[in-house]
Image (cartoon, rainbow, N blue to C red):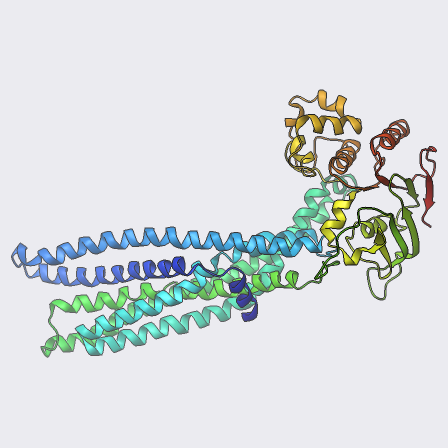
Length: 543
């Protein structure tokens, strides 16, 4: 886990000026609080003797100044430390997103688990600087100052304060860390399990209700929630134990100081006015070490989160860009030569010795039953993964010698489950070309047969499509995906099940239009329908 935290520190290092300012302001706030209690104790003791008011003026001014400085320093510390935390959080999100993108679509992490890592685990790491690393430094600085101040007032009292702070600053965090370590490690996994159950329950609610499986899945969700709640309770118990023992130590330190200070007052080694001062100083000094047990818990939780993030970052992406990629040839065919694919080294072959050639301007239909590997072949053509045997070439150049991004600019894929984002129709289309104007967007919508539908929308291109395209039908979703592929420049189009949600007449009209609008681009239409009109140059069956 230490290695994981080191990796996080390297990936999102704290800005030294902000981190230093945060620690300095926090230390200043704690020392102001300790000084406030000390001076207040001396002021109360002195005032009890009823001296002239002028004799108390300096102490009164100090109390007011320390009270104001404590509030101001704490406010400034919150501003600086939270700014540091949010900046680090932004860096971590970008880093993790960059690590996840190359894994798509080859990653086998469950969606709920991936969501938990991307949200909960990354969010947890915002505590690393704020609640895990800063408190020990602040505690060391302020504890040293408190011990020195107590030693100046009463040397033996300084020793007592030092012993109490060592016990509270080292013993309590060790105990809390031991109590929370197992719970902290297991909480991240339990959160992922709960997130997975929630995602599946939300996305499959209709099917679960239709088949009467709702109560069973709700029970599973309740079990996952109960497991996480149990771990959270264990964390809470650790925090409560630390808080209670901290209060006992604080009171015990005050009593111990009194036991050594009272004889000193009687022996004229300590001014009686300072008796309350040194006693309250001992109690106030525990404000320095009070956050340390929580810091130990945060450190344990951050280590668990960092380990889970590092597991994702260490995953090998299905494809990698070559160190010196070759330029994409501007001419030539897209060819699969004897490609074979399987997802596990000892698993069955999904594709075995498959050949396919798509020339520019050609129209090819790839047909076959579900599960035969048609989508896997599409993934090979856009280099979402590489074949285990054989090769895919573009203009005679192996795709493994090209940058994957360059390949996908030349070969555009519209997947069988085109995702519709929870934004406007315009922004959904502009994913393919951010600078496209409304006239171009309407043109491509007309090409895929959605112009009449758009004209009937209340806000036209500004119409919100809802989360996951909740307001559009399956056929409209597919056509929006094809419209994106057409909008983007590309020499080849790979359309996976573009007519899956259309009736026969609509599918025929769509394919007729596609033949016209594709122009000189090579088009591969993947479908499980065997009976296709004769608008293709070739129909290839994948058995």
